[in-house]
Image 1 (tube, rainbow, N blue to C red):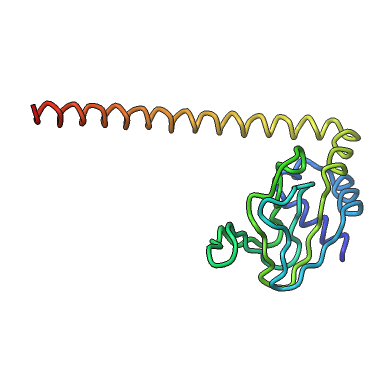
Image 2: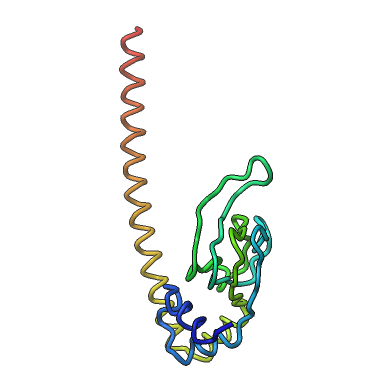
Length: 168
């Protein structure tokens, strides 16, 4: 494990972009390093998510379902953060992560992340503003989708009425 390499990887994670060099160093030093061999499971779908996991070496495939019904959901490389929301709130893993090659990862437990935000309130404030902006953008996008669905529903109702009037 190289602390310098880990800091560089953590710096590339968008959620951690607000962290200073010293904060990233503290995070990298305090986090847990995991080794997962090729074909090994990083985490399972439905498993309790106790924090985030950053991939530092290798590639991981996310999949949903088990056995023959397992469906790939994407392949991810170094700098990927799995479980961003799990850094801040209790949750379950929405997919299974499988190592496509020997992998190294950094596990950042929620308690560690919370302690970092308590010790550095200015960083917590920046993260809060970023998350609020993301939620605002998502809400606006969902409102646009809702309006489109309303238009489709209105067209469908109009079509049903036209078909019914032709039958009469």
